Image (tube, rainbow over all chains, first blue to last red):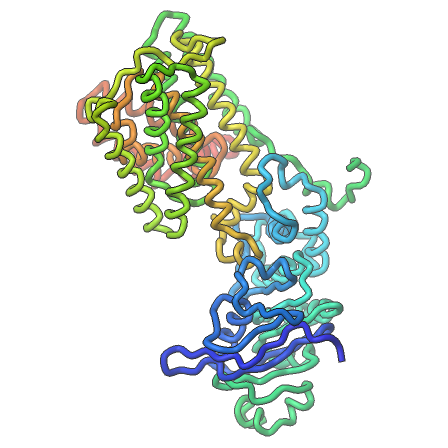
Length: 248
Length: 331
């Protein structure tokens, strides 16, 4: 089995009396897509905000390549190889598509206290940005404003921006949200090509996509992980069917 | 990097930005900047000192507006305390001069340095807040600086202090109106060019990115606070320079140069001219002071029609004067 990149141990978080994350342990390995599914309100978002340091857990640890990153500052995470896309599309609307990605590339190239040379004339910045755009098939739209893109294209742009920092660990927060069937199919194809030399944690509602993409699936219900396994194991797990897939 | 190595699909995306913009707007911008240079010279040549001084006033405030535009227009930081930097720059000329130190090579670095330092200290605190709180806290710091200078009895207190002779540059003598005008115009040109370089650099992209979507910038790994603070310090230092020039222009320094209404005027110049455009604040300063001048010739109640005009311009002219120039020639 391949190397464990991200490991979560005993993670707990509660808001008042509500336990949103209840002793969660999971790992994500190199070359795999690990999906987290669960009904609305299961605590998926709370869980991943803790993985990315946007919220601190009450207890437990998050390890990346064996180092404890539970309390690592948000802006330091990109430089060690973590990147995420957002559930709500969050791009720079008044920037061109290429500039969006170039900003992401730039973030990975040391500090930006460079005041003189025009960033738009920097060959490597632009070339790497273009490569990331080409990976998601958006290179044809490079000079459009992000605000001119369709919803599906903005989701693609999100992923290009995450790829621009060349991360080893990629968190995709509902990449298919709000997409039509055609757009979703395109995205599934895209994501399949991305897992090589990477670990991907996928949070997604689109079950067809999840079962097609994921190497392993974890099911979260009321803040608790009730099962982890291959898509087939999850499909046949009676507890999961009862709690989440309803009848099936 | 030779030109041949650039792949074909990348070429259109590797263009250097243009200082004056593109198309017909470019011509108008150059024309206005040329007029701002020529008209005061003609006024001086015809022996009209008033219009020369008036032009220098426009130029000095344009420098302050350009500095504010860097953080307000490009950085999205609404500072309501920029007058403080003007005041600090002005007193950095007045106080040494009072003690007999008249060298401009002391005055100007001191003005830039102290304004930058004040920006560093107040910015470090202010930038921990957002939105309305940022506006209020920058204004509060500016008012603190205002009352500080107002209470300095030694330096005139609320009576102000007279600058008996202008800063001494050694080589050039800025007591001469035309020389002073040329100095101010050069400083403005340099500040515009600096802004142009900065906003298009990597740093500028980060600054604009923070304006567009700060949470996303943080997620990308940028320490947005540090970049914004740096921009704030650059802006403050530049505005201090404007203050040093204004002290020399007026030959008289009072804390009134740094009241909060002055901060508001600067904001208005930026917005009226076109926030986030290179030349917008210059157009804004020209328009603001011209309208003020014309209206006050008609009535002592000029502030009322002036206010109405400003409100209308903000409501109906998208992108300010700069936007008007770009659009007017497009359609």
